[in-house]
Image 1 (cartoon, rainbow, N blue to C red):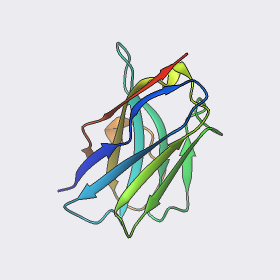
Image 2 (image 1 turned 90 degrees about the vertical axis):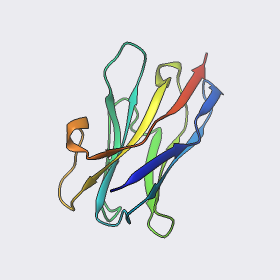
Image 3 (image 1 turned 60 degrees about the vertical axis):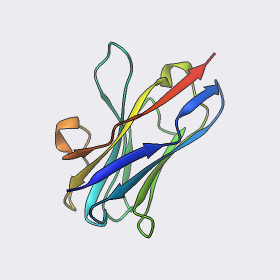
Image 4 (image 1 turned 90 degrees about the horizontal axis):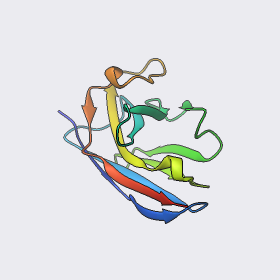
Length: 125
């Protein structure tokens, strides 16, 4: 069993930056693909970014590519999402997710086995 805890959310002005963290416990994340998703009020949960088990492959939603960076620190069993040039439309609850396995790029919520509780990101205009 993997427990995931997100942190780093908050209120920021448009154009600002935030760094989200997702700390894992229970198991090492070494053999897990990790993803970040977000959900705005009244909308479905949507894919933001993913990183494979080794950290060598990343993939982003078109809406965040070039502004967000996903990374992982195996020693700390933590995954990060650096968010720059934030826009009001980035406002949402951000969730991290884990999927056991070493192959492929996974962008659907149903691809992931474990989820954190979410952290609120609010971008003011």
